[in-house]
Amino acid sequence: MNSQGTKVFVGMSGGVDSSVSAALLKQQGYDVTGVFIKVWQPDWIECTWRDERREAMRAAAHLGIPFVTLDLEKEYKEGVIDYMIAEYSAGRTPNPDVMCNREVKFGAFWRWAEKQGADYVATGHYVRIKREKEKEGKREEIQMLAGKDSNKDQSYFLWTLNQDDLKHVMFPVGHLEKSAVRALAKKFKLPNAEKKDSQGLCFIGKIDVKDFLAHYIKTEKGNVLNENGEVIGSHNGALLITIGERHGFIIDAKHKTPHDERYYVISKDVEKNTITVSNKNDQDTITNNQVKQMVKLLRMNWVGPTSTVGTMLQARTRYRQSLQDIEIISVSNGSVVVEFKIHQDTVTPGQSLVMYRGEECVGGGIIE
Image 1 (spheres, rainbow, N blue to C red):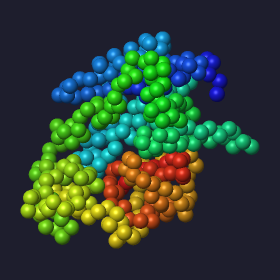
Image 2: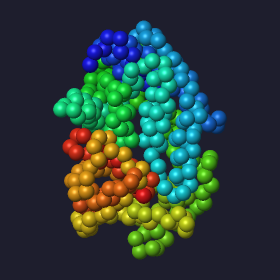
Image 3: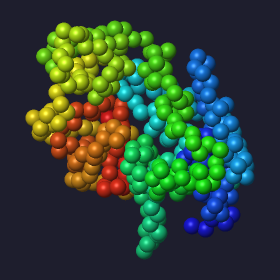
Image 4: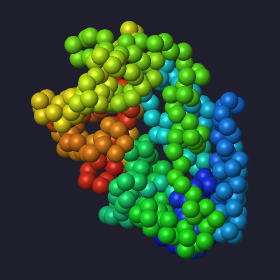
């Protein structure tokens, strides 16, 4: 790719990954502009965006690149926060990071950057892009591959991207291990080279999702049931609990022994405000339940060509889950049915199921 005269707007969060991304692009000869995206934050939490912007601004100044603040409060509030609250209120468990990427980082950000004359937008995500040049009249196909660092791979959160998106997106650190990115930050003498990775809700930062939602969703105390339907504890609201969780509820002392495995949520009933938990070892559950399982996906997106019925792929239903074998059972308008070859205990309505062919992310959808 010819870098000379190519304008790239880099989303700079104030963190190491996006700062190194900007440094690498500048080193490669691109015309780089740093952009800090300002999003909506509730007035009841500690305001952190000014500190993050200051870190991003310092990195941009050190690199000698222009720096812009882009206000996307409205887009973030409507596309991420309102969506998240609505989904939890309906008893589903959404993934706000997925919607943040779709609506903000690769939606509103790109639309604005394009109007400013940008050829590409870039972020510090740990994902790789492979561009296959046009052959024999077929248009260029772009593959999205998992990041080289398996511990940092973020392809799970980017399944909503399609070919049109990938044409104007760059991921400069996707081919690197995190340790190499840290080393580059020191080599470039970036002022935030030692900054720790951020945790928490996309953009908003260090706040527990349940604590955040408690300000917007009314919940009531409910019962925790075992697999026989017996009450063995309590929780503060089924709406805010996710299948597969190992916390967020209390097991009564009389139902615990020092040798018990930790309990985890296997189902919930929002109408009755109950959750059902198990303390069986995950592997024992799988071994004793070699049952195939159908899962329907809504809002299905294929990163590249649509997979057909009968296609064998791998998938995960939560971030960092090991890949599981699946088969495409049906494909219709916006929805897909897949079959897991082994029963899954953590299939949660509202969460993302993301499909892979080896290291290639081929698409995903929302679990019905």
